[in-house]
Image (cartoon, rainbow over all chains, first blue to last red; front, side, top):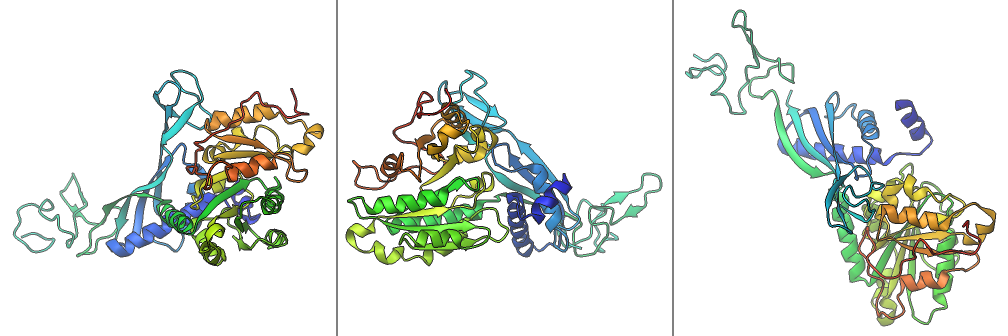
Length: 129
Length: 304
């Protein structure tokens, strides 16, 4: 898996997870200067099933950018949450794993995503040494 | 006396909740020895705590969303409606834009058009747009796989739509943002556009909406381009529309050949609804309006 991502990076097919990892690092560095910590022992992220983010690729990207930063050596936990949608046909609120799923109640595809669309930083376990 | 700070507290840890003191992180069950530094930090520094939790609960794309909202307000204040064109490389986005700009010139209503061209390298596309007479600015992302709201805001501030925006009829303007050719990454980044438009050419295969559902879910309109090539390729239009609507029940669909001109009037009407004084109003992400081809819609030459 790592080899695949490396070859994509070399070929200039940079995955958006690397941009997201950079965004995560910037947010953590801002928190570090605000909250006065030096190192992140554990980073907990939440990826919605409809966020368009591949957790494996995000983990790889974070690993690639963390050396020399406050994230170096930190443990990364990624919680995956289900997508939520409202069925425009039967009005049910259902869990879906992707935009390809149908309504579990009526079988229709007229689903409007209502949740599980975000990538969020939940919390950090930080240390000051 | 307490060995941590010299106070007279009776317990060895419970009263030292303040951040200014080292904490005992372990007590040996066998002999009662005290251990500092077995926590996450692996060492003990008086005056600094071992570890603490910081609750962030923050959207990683929050900053981009903030900048996109700023762009949206900026566009609106200048009478500009922005459209983000996304597709795989080679679907014909630039050709479609050049044809659209030339066709818009022939319409009675005056409209200014400008283009932001996103590519990893080269300014070839911006030069093609400029050849039509429309202002274009190239944004090279280097190895970046998408445009973000900041790039678009920076590029917009360098375009001369501002000046045009302050004179009557010319205050109507369309900003086309041609994103980096990529059906994955640009889906996540709101640029401040009125709508994302996904372009799919018939040479690509009708199953793209299923393979890249995030993009088709984010788009308000799907343009099936290069329909002049239908006789030569095995592309099932009805199935493609069905797949796109499975992913996004509100997506609108247009069939276009930018080189031959098929469907161009419908496309321009979509951009500038003929019976409306203003521009198309669509919510980002999911189309809300009007005409939608049903899966029964067919184009001559399509596979039955």
